[in-house]
Every structure is written in C-alpha cells, then in structure tokens.
Length: 202
Image (tube, rainbow, N blue to C red; front, side, top):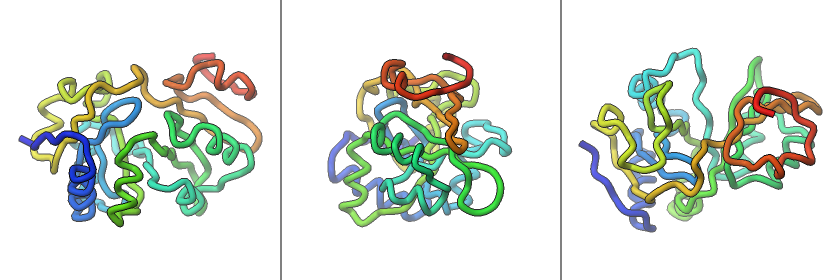
C-alpha cells in the first residue's frame, strides 16, 4: 500500500524526487486527484494504463509545469494562447495539433501548489496526469474515493483534502480559429461565453 503524505514543501520535493526516478505519484489538483508520471518514463506510463484499465489507443493528457512547454509539444496559435492567458493555470485542458507529425495532444497546467514547488526543487519535466480512477468510473475528489486497485504499489499519495471543484477540467479542442467543447467541466459557462464554441454540452 502506498504511503499517504500531507501537502507541504517537503512532501512536494519528495514527490518530485520519486517522479524523477520513474515512479507514479497521486497528486491533488483543483479538480480531481490524478495519477502522475514523467511523460518520458514509458514503463510508468504503461503502468498507468494498466491501473486505470484504459485502452492504449486513448492518449493520456500531458501536464505541464510551465506554460512555455506547450510550444515544445504542440502548435500554439493566437486563439490557444489567449485561452492559456486567461485560464492557465486552471481547470482547462486544451487539445492542440502536435508540433510534429499528425494528431493532437491534450495539455493541462493545473492550479496546484505542487507545480511551483516542483520547479523550485529543480523538477521541470512534463508529466502525464490522468484522473486516479478506473476508466468509466467517477474521478476521485478525495483520497478516500480512490480505488484500492489504483493505490496499491504506487510511489506515494499526497492528500490535499477535498478538491475545490466537483467536476473534472473543461476540455476544448482548438482547430485554427474554431473551438470545440469536448467535455463540459469545471469552467463555468459564463467564463466561456465570450468565445464561439461548438460541441456537445452547450
């Protein structure tokens, strides 16, 4: 069973050290608890798929530690940048065209204390970050909601209490000048009202 730690600078630094070694850590965000691993740690990423029972053809979202990292992964146009300016860090996931090759990636910059703490500890690597639940089940809003199947054998769990929001992040796809809502989430409708958005849930 994984050890549960309270939030705090020492805890965040310990989590950064574990992530650097290729471990999986459960992190609190402003929306839900997530399974995190270095995006370039292939074995840890594969383990997250197995823990979640998630199909391998469904890419995991990338969690950035700095907004500027988005340009390393994706094509960021003026519309995407304006959304980052307004909503990052925060509960918005942006689906953008890959910088190289076909397809797209989902990028997220959470509003969570550990993001800046990781940077101060010298950990500045993008992570995969996916809700700490079995695929198809509700995402956990507290440590107590995380399935025992998920927590067994992980590096550590940070217990940040109940997540401030009761919904997962809002997901928007940016295609040129078009915005498509892929998942309604924590961003309130009035925050998105100035934008012309298509998609389910509107």
